Image (cartoon, rainbow, N blue to C red; front, side, top):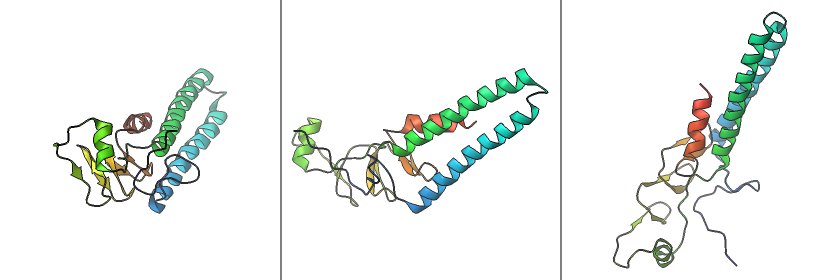
Length: 161
């Protein structure tokens, strides 16, 4: 039976595979969702008031807004709940076997979480773990942006404009 990998950090919460419990990040996520739903409220109220005046124009604008709103909401949720590329904990021998490296090769060890760190991985103090190809820790998605969720983050930022 294959066991689940052990990740560094404290990011498992509420039954989700990946969830960050940072209070500032949770407030930013709540504010982001409130702004998204406030946009929905404003569009519905404006569209209902002026629907008789310009029906075709309003319907096209409504459909376009709903598409971008849906893309922003789904990509924000995926960015928030997807593992950004956390480096697994384990012994050096396990790491060498999994990566198929030679015994004489040099490995970097993180000074904060003591995991074997691959190239381009950085330690995030908020997530308390090393993230592969880490870009930054974004409080608006309450997660690091890294190898595993960068495409969802880019889709989120593009769909907001």
